[in-house]
Image (cartoon, rainbow, N blue to C red; front, side, top):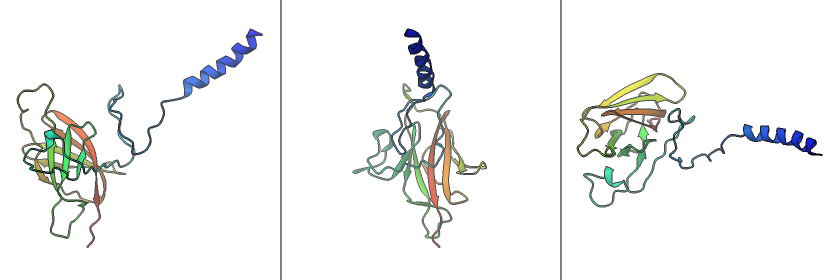
Length: 174
């Protein structure tokens, strides 16, 4: 009698070993865990514009209410504060695609890191041709225009640090 039970138990164990982790719902919060192979890259555009208050480390120079549109990097080390929203390709309204970049201070560092340019390597969704922009002096005020409308995945490098985010540039209405 015990032999048939073992025979049935083997397929059940094999099937149990084939199931992967539960899928995270689309648009759900990131868990903060990083796989051993490094951070994963979202398959589709994942621009996440927030409108709440800026964190204390990003509100220097602001007074009063710091509720403004912003997008955090996937690692949470940088924030794009969007003074122009929506971002628009080939603006015809006289405005600029003004972004204030704020970097989280490095943990355990008592003095600021040496200032190096913020290098933005942007790749439009569905392409593999990068476009590079540079913000002199590191994270700070900038005007970032990109050559086409669409979702752009940005790799942000500054002072030996790296983070990523997606930003959407809408087509011009002119």
